[in-house]
Image 1 (tube, rainbow, N blue to C red):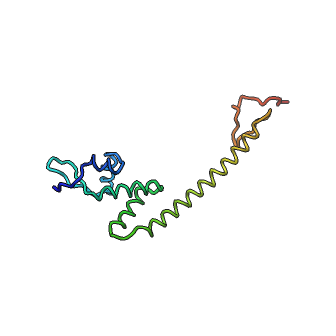
Image 2: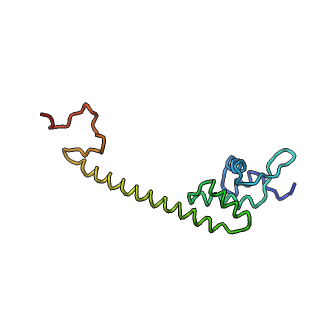
Image 3: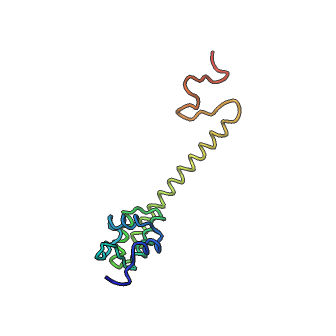
Length: 142
């Protein structure tokens, strides 16, 4: 066993992740299976810190673990993963822009409803109603 091998505690402290996260990444193949001591304790190479930081950074950008695994596969060959990452990031950006448009439309609808709620009449959300079915609107009737 190498003397410069890191314990899981050292890895998690330096990478800013929890031990269960490291174990999970190992199980799903994002991290290589570490060497073990005779007592079955995990021992990691220094490179695992960089790999964990890469995973965290790409997660922050909204990439899924599957997408991150794909990028790591490219990166592990020694090739820069920028080309496949560009495609993924463009797709995520398009999704964010679509969600922003949806939220903008929702904001406009809520603003319109709120402005219609002031006064005696109540703006009714479509297709439902604010009041329960047994509730009669004021001033209505035959």
